[in-house]
Image (cartoon, rainbow, N blue to C red; front, side, top):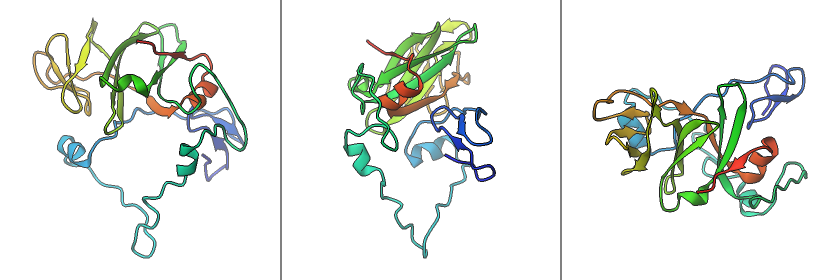
Length: 215
């Protein structure tokens, strides 16, 4: 990415300026909602405004065209001819990249291969002593990551229908909002963490100290 004011180049993975007048500056990472159907989103957030996409001559020209289709279908890795390989996984393996900050201020990284979500939509894990709930729905490609503790109580989750999960106390949680919808915890929210669906080679290049989740 580049910004119009200074023409500095920014990494869309780390959020840091890598070239130009703002080199070394860091953008703040914001957590994002999972990819979901419009009907589901509208049900949870009925006051939502909708972004009007640019049109050409009154039509949304090229809106459904993927300019990177050939790249996705190939085994090419890297940008502008730069190749990179970390052979712990195939370069074009899709992973969920997660990073956490531990109590001592250090950052730890882990890649969760999408292939682990074939039979289940939920993984309970711990990274740097931070208990994590990793959610990925293979049909919609929706991904969400939360801390799986409610106050000091660490919960274990299993998938329910759609974007819902239930914990070991029987509480049902909505992973669009992160909110408990039943039981004594009703109304409480899980803390959502940043996550990215990304090719392994890119995640490993930016975060070479990353570990890989193994069941």
